[in-house]
Amino acid sequence: MKTLTVSGGRELSGEVRIRGSKNAALPLLFASLLFSEPVELDNLPAITDVETALALLSSLGVKIIRKGSERVVLDPSSARPSVCDRGLTGALRGSLYLLGAASGRLGELALPHPGGCNFGARPIDLHLEVLRAMGLTVRATEEGVSVKGRPKGAVFEFPYVSVGATVNALLAATLAEGRTVLTGAAREPHVLDLIAFLRLAGARIATPSPGAVVIDGVPRLHGVTYRVCPDMIEAGTYLSFALATGGAVTLRAVEPAHLFPVLPVLSEMGAKIGTGVGTLTVFRPGRVAPVRIATAPYPGFPTDLQPQLTALACLADGESVIADPIFPTRFGYVSELRKTGAKIKVADGRATVFGGTRPAGAKMTAPDLRAGAALTLAALASEGESRIMRYELIERGYADFCRNLVSLGACVTLSDGDA
Ligand code: EPZ
Image (cartoon, rainbow, N blue to C red; front, top):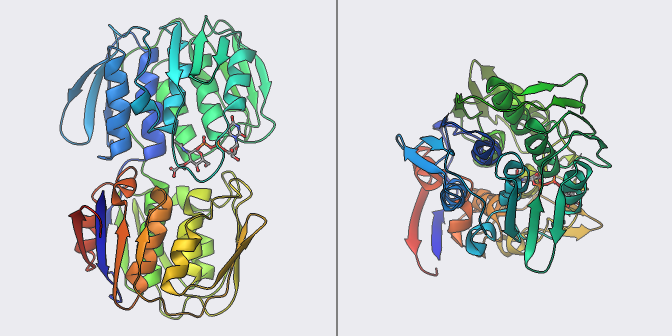
């Protein structure tokens, strides 16, 4: 188990290069199973979730050629159905995408239950429902989920927005027989990145209105080279660190438009934000101000920045309320934040943060990757030394996290073993 030690109270200033989006990279990697010829992906984030996805693809017979730390060639021509490794699928909620991707060319797959962040129930009923609507035989048992058959076009209205179920539907519909019409689909930038990738490879996908997707199945896709879109959650995370410590931070290789649900919220909390071509600059001339916000599917405020915002609100002059109707139980990290002296009440899927406290260093344990980032924010803003255990959870989604913090002037060190 790795531990990040932070000597807090220092302003962060300087530049960070934003990497490719984790939540775009996973669908793109698994989509390679739809191809019968090689695809090349660039700007892949060097994170453990990508390594887990590559190991899963390799276990299915996909040949992987590395071209540097952020570029791979995937040759799926000899991919074959098999039972996926439980250790790998258990570590990655995104392994669910294998169900939709496998239905294209492999025709069947057995998937031990997927894992992912443990901030509450992570049901998969909607994934099963949309794949069954496309005529696939989907069996869910204690052991996991299996899919079999050839997908057929279907009309499917999502009862609520699900990123993962939208991805699975897109993957299954790409090579299906006939037309699939989705309504109420997810619109996150990482979902649109998958659509752009599939279109470039010859898929016939239209997005006639927000949340509507029309896919006319095609017999095959041709190989492409594609650059993963920037990670908006990584970007929002570093912006929140700058706001928390008071320094001036510039993000490079970022897509400012992706953050348009986030920037007004940070401005309300005291940020001054400049945008350029591929860059975002933030600094905080005054104090941190309180905020009242609820997460929502894109273009709403992303739930993946909820923990970071709650930690930031601890520094605000006044009371903030942060609600998370998407994951109402995603506040497990608050008990760790309280160790820094934070005054937070959690009830009914929302956190009421009383703010006004100068956090003190504490020994904390990261429950998942975004909460780990939130605890890091608190540690950076605290007087004194903090230790964050289970740093390896942060490495699931943030490349070069420790190195980036050091380059921004933070006093952090990484060690193996308990604190
Ligand atoms: C994706 O998870 C992301 N993971 C999550 O990011 C992110 O928090 C979430 O989307 C919301 O944006 C990846 O992209 C790998 P959902 P996903 O299906 O697809 C309910 C991170 O930190 N639901 O959009 O699992 C669900 O419980 C991770 O990068 C069902 O009830 O999220 C939630 O309330 C954490 N049944 C809501 O829908 C289902 O079958 C939205 O979940 C599916 C979802």
